[in-house]
Length: 75
Image 1: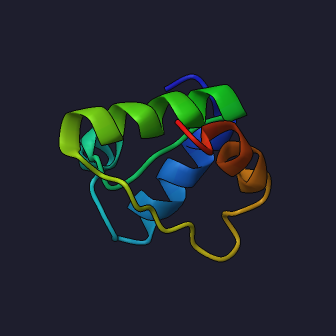
Image 2: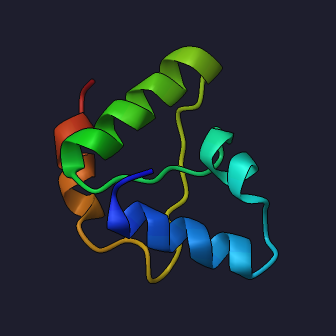
């Protein structure tokens, strides 16, 4: 994982004991991204592979997510 933002988010989850690092990166329940395009691609893949059509964005992690919603609306 070369993206510093995703690395920080992953480290926060791992350091809190919430999840092991390998599990966080491989989980369909946790998405990391440094750009709108990257997050959208991950969410489309999540929908296509696992049938997920609803996601939750936690407080403090939603900055910029409105751009993701706009891009994915109608897809």
